[in-house]
Length: 219
Image (cartoon, rainbow, N blue to C red):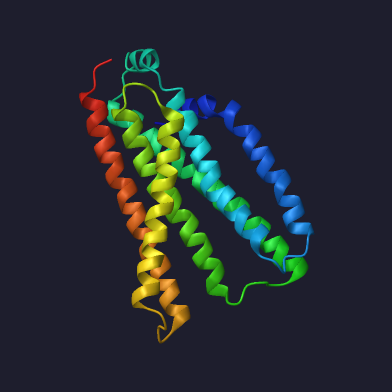
């Protein structure tokens, strides 16, 4: 498993390192500039926790051609382990994005103060970004492994829109039925936790479905 994850790293490092460098450089003005307008912080959070995992996922699938599958399956490994390594690598990319966003947010708060109305607003922001990333990744990997024409970019865009659409749909329903919750802070916290758990469950389910498809696939 460690060998497969290390191999995934070599597959994505060239295409991802530029985006990672861009995210790090972009974090500097986000920290330096006054954060009274939270749009920069919000944009950076989504870039780190959604954009970076999306780039990683597309690199993993783009370099996952039929010849590569024929080669890697000559080694004494199970097909399920190949898929598991991809999903673990993607989860690691999300963790990196969360850490980067957390560092920038913490530095900005330390220098300029806390610009949000409530602390739970930051948690809600992170929750929505993490939820989008899990939903997006779940659909992306499953779709890539059932697609026979290697349409990585198209699937990536559709998966991103799918993740955004799910989160926006949840928020819209909540706004309709819970306009004035009794305890807004605890309510938003519980919603954020439920959204992340649901998205993670879909991500795990996608792993099993993708593993099944990959095990039945002929190269």
